[in-house]
Amino acid sequence: MKTLVCTFASSKYWTDKDELNEVFSIIQSKFQDKTFVTFVDNVPSTQVNYKEFDDVTIVVMSGSTQPDILECASHFEKIVLFAGYVPGNFPINITDLMLCKNAGPTLMDTYGTLKREPNKVVSMQKNFKSYEAFMKVLNAYDYVKNSKVTVIKGPEPWVISTCRDTKDYEKTLGLNINVTSQEELLNIYKETTDDEAKYIYDYYLLDPVEIIEPTNETIMSCARMAKAMIKLIEKHNSCGLAIACFDLIKQSGINPCIGVSYINSETEYFAACEGDVDSAITMLLMHGLTNEKPFMANPCLQEDDSINFAHCTAPVKLHGKRQSYILRNHHETGVGTSIRVLYPENMNVTLLRYSGVNNVLTINKGITVKGRYEPNCRTQICIKLNDFDKYIDTVQGCHQVISFDDIEKEITDLCKLLRIKVI
Image (cartoon, rainbow, N blue to C red; front, top):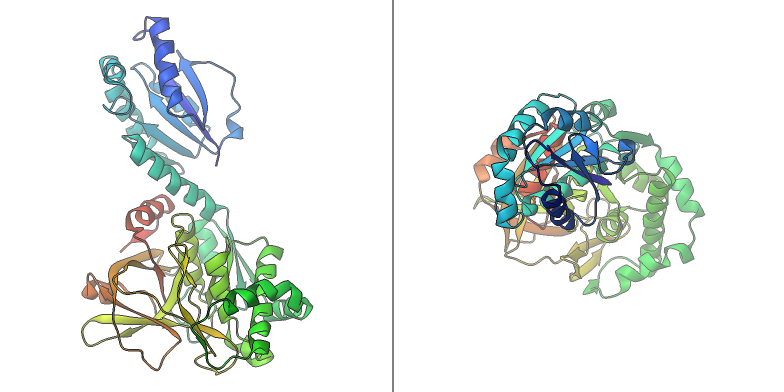
């Protein structure tokens, strides 16, 4: 994302040119990684092609600049107004000069006007800490808006809560949903060699605590499927995928569980199983906001109001470190290779699910606790929620996407930009 930073000053207020140029220099030093242009009486310090930039950050330095700012902002969809006059952003003598020259009311007047524009993303940031955090959210907004998600076949018949009309996602979020067939994936799998997939095979054979059902041959077959899934994502120039699993297992005898696990653990892409597009979109929303890898899982309620979340597709990495794990077969079908990751207790987690039907995102927070290992999917993680009743009241479907990071504020801010209701 390429950002233009513009300062706006009026000679009516800034009568000493040398003083103004010195202030410009100090302001520019705080935006070193961005293109910087100054406007005095709407005359730019250098000619600028607005089309070269994705967004603009505007620093208001005085009154009598509102029309100039609006003209500049008219070239952008994404506009950030930075309250440079707030003490702490620059030396106090400079912030006081901005205040003296009417930057405060001018900024708010402009902000109130720009917010009326229905098709613009307009934000006010009061200091560099909030500014840098928001720019990360804005980058995630761009990522979502320019994304393509590949769906292999579609949601499984029993995943009834997910949105089944892909045009709903395109309409509400502006992204591209690309539906393809399992046959395409199987053809890529048949063309994928053991040598191509060996790095994934080695990844899972590196340090398992135990291997129970899978043979080396089975693990290699599943590694080839994982590599085929990555190839398919790259072929379609997608950010990630949602894969219908069970017909694929029936046709090939190979499950994609470690494919989902590996993609979420080690690649720049994401993957959701059971064809659950809502879960894939949830991962998409998370992707630009956290380095922690997502775990999509089924909830099993417990007597003490904790919830045991279970699935066979967990990522191995947590906070950048490999976790202990056991290689198993697939829980429901008994075939192939799945993974039981042994996640630790006392971790703070965020549970998320986007609903394409309602265009809402649910956010629940909790902590991992000790739980009984149930006759269920292979990886199990028991979570004591901060508000169990809220989870029950707001839940939008079965699968939850778990982030091993607290991203509540960041994803709430992103949803605000995308006009997704957060509950």
